[in-house]
Image 1 (cartoon, rainbow, N blue to C red):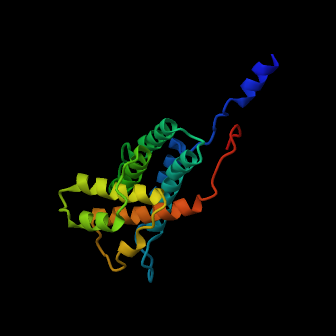
Image 2 (cartoon, helix red, strand yellow):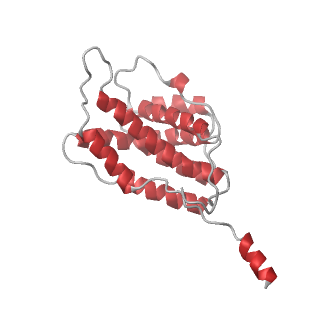
Image 3 (cartoon, rainbow, N blue to C red):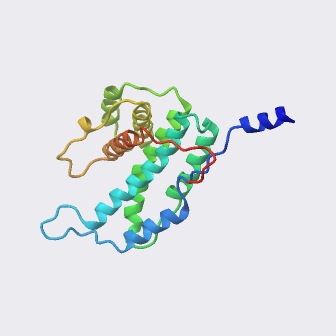
Length: 208
């Protein structure tokens, strides 16, 4: 009996962390519906744009917590992939009606690189030559989005793995950045999020 009890105690405890849920997404959408996307007099950035950036940051941080727990061996690759899919379904499924449709659609396009980069990282075997990848991505035409996404996702995977990017490749004077540049901006957000999660972990068996 004693041996059985000891063996039972040694079993790994489950994680209860809720990374993202539909209610959290819906609350953000409701908040954005009441936001003003026209900059106030003398301001360059509107209240709505500031909220949208915080919205994207919140999603990025939530997703990368899954990856961080995988790195800490709290989650298996299959568990991390399943949890990533759960969040992706919430974030990438459907669009709100009305004025937010185009805004959230643009956000979803930007976040494509987050989810694809995480999958590339979990699968392994991604290219780590960031300078060459940026050059290759910028050389692609606007109609080669699938290839551009894979290149950007490799950059993102390298960042998750500890590489530095992408502030030096983001031009301050870009008024109308292309989608590849939007992905580089999101990857920079990912880089900052990974730094902020350096000490993130969860004690197994405790609800968060």
